[in-house]
Structures are given as structure tokens and as C-alpha cells.
Length: 98
Image (cartoon, rainbow, N blue to C red; front, side, top):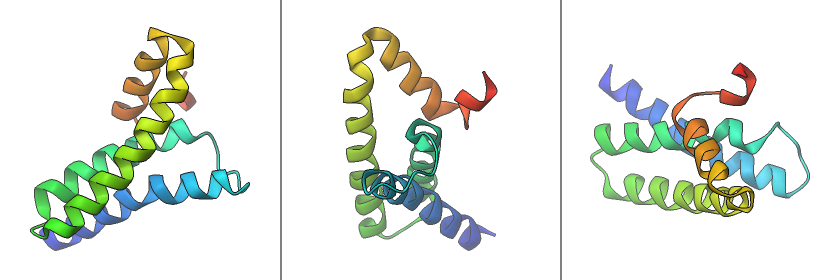
């Protein structure tokens, strides 16, 4: 069970950078903010369940770069942008719930 959860965490933490690269290359798979929760929760699962420091470092660095890039874009909307990023990080598919 623990090994399966580790692989789920690795896959979840890889989704956000892959979706971002696809979006930057013109392949639209939806709004990028909808995928922020995958990177956030995937990194948490990888950090808790993985013993390899390489998995942890790669997952955190890739997702942190994407999250910080999206946060810089959201900051153009003022403090409301930070609130939106936080909600999208914590609540899966937040914009679909509104």
C-alpha cells in the first residue's frame, strides 16, 4: 500500500510540470490553475513516503518553479491573486466548483 501511494505521489507531482510545458507549447489541456493541487499534494506525498532525496528534490524544484511562475502572473491582480493561488493549491479543481 505504501509503495503504491509513493508512485501515486510521483505521478501527481509530475502532472503540473508536464501540463505547464504542454500549455506553453500550444497544447491546451485546461486552465493551469486547475492543476496546482496536483503539484502541491504530489510533493507532500513524495516527501512523506519517498526515501530517495533525488525524487524529493526534483519534485519540489519543478513544482516550485511552476507554482512561482503562476503566482507571479496572479500577482498582477493584486492581493486577490494570492488568494486565488492559495485556494487552487488547497482545493482540487476550485474554479470548477464556483
